[in-house]
Length: 129
Image (cartoon, rainbow, N blue to C red):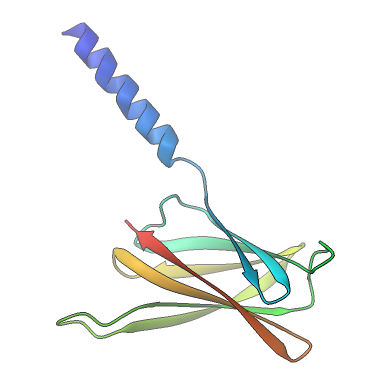
């Protein structure tokens, strides 16, 4: 009986380690390399803090852009589409904001970077638990 208890605890520990840490996505947005970090892995229903690092073609941090996060879930039977926006603010060399995922499931995220009058977009999905 003791061996079973120890085995179960080890499995729970390993599962916890697998889910620990941040959720990370790397994408191209036009000429920019974008790294998105969400503080929960997997993202959860409720508040999730996002950090966005934007680098130009030469690998330098972009700190003079406007960064917006648009996130949505398409309409489903008995439920209208959900569309939200969050403006990210410069914090050091990256941009930070918070998104609130109102229900579990697949969310579409469009990261919009506007610099010198030109907007570039990186798109990805996250599955909220």
